[in-house]
Image 1 (tube, rainbow, N blue to C red):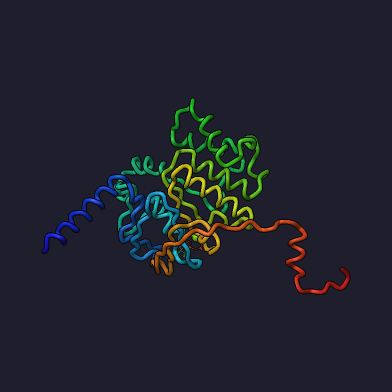
Image 2 (image 1 turned 135 degrees about the horizontal axis):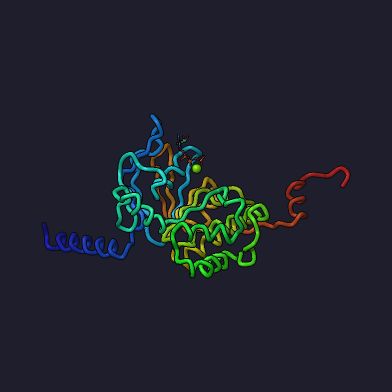
Length: 274
Ligand SMILES: Nc1ncnc2c1ncn2[C@@H]1O[C@H](COP(=O)(O)OP(=O)(O)OP(=O)(O)O)[C@@H](O)[C@H]1O
Ligand SMILES: [Mg+2]
């Protein structure tokens, strides 16, 4: 081995160790597999989510996107392989330590999963209660999170009194309450119209840029993935087909006026009794 090759190997080892020490790799899946009965939903997947990135996972319905996301916080227990978060191997932790580690992982869903008989304030407060957050500091923490998503005046409202976009903002505030390092998002905009989708993606971008939270977002909507992600994993039949680097393009707001809708619906048509 030449001196140059030896030097290059030493330098790459030093850089790798340095990056790991700084927590550069936030989530690492090593050969993770998951079956439901005899059906193998995830087949020996290895994937690294870097600290600070917005990572997309896209693929056809049934490809295993939600299962892969749920494996990242061990809501699904892998049959094989390891899940590492910030250097901690979650697969080896006791259930008490796992509960502790899960506080650094927030999650939001397509259907918001808010508690119907609790107010906006209570929906956020409950996650602090469950995490035994100091009682005296709870109120200010809830208000900080609601302010972040622009809903500080909605404290006393119930989920049924909110629009879909507002519900998702509450869910984001709730997920942020315990200051997570990563936010896992499963189809967070699939129930929303295009403009509300753009707004929620804006909130998620703020969560990433202003709070430094790493985001993993599962979606079947190409526009969403192209609009916000830096790196995207394409999943097919429980396997990684490819992972690509992209430049997020941002989702454009649509004209929401009733006139625009009529124009779009009648474009190129002569209306008999207009
Ligand atoms: N708890 C479960 N029990 C049995 N089968 C399951 C379970 N969860 C998922 N599966 C199966 O695993 C496969 C992957 O499911 P998953 O929900 O991860 O897909 P997906 O890519 O998120 O699909 P979609 O885009 O429709 O949400 C599917 O065939 C599904 O039926
Ligand atoms: Mg899914």
